[in-house]
Figure 1 (cartoon, helix red, strand yellow):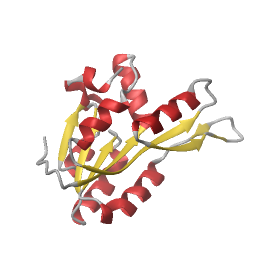
Figure 2: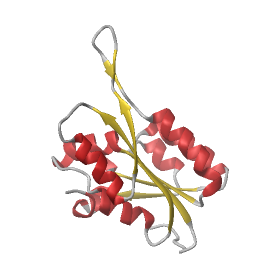
Figure 3: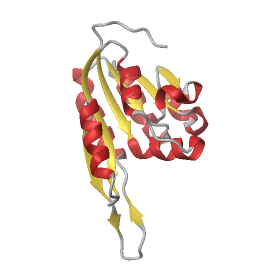
Length: 165
């Protein structure tokens, strides 16, 4: 685990789609966002927690968004875009990156909850700017380049009962 100091200011950014698909693929379970947030903050000062979610027109999703807010996450919601050929797309990579860069001057540590290798350049940039980068994800689906660009890595697969419902 990383060096923890109670005065560290922390932001937690959760790539909910990445976490959801991995948790279901590996364990057929959902993410325990309370456990994830508690572990990510780890007795430090939480500046901001954001969960990036996709609206899929599922009946239970509004309850999920409300639950995230009750836990302490700000839920940023994106609609799925359907293209003329019927293909669909919705991802938060640019939004997560912009928020991370914006928050960088307000935090000491950024906890990225994702295994997506697309964030490796972002992590390298933020480290260069003096921000500590901690990645929380499942080792089985975490890109090597993301691991290489972070200061520390918490493998959620080592303790699935802490991070999964």
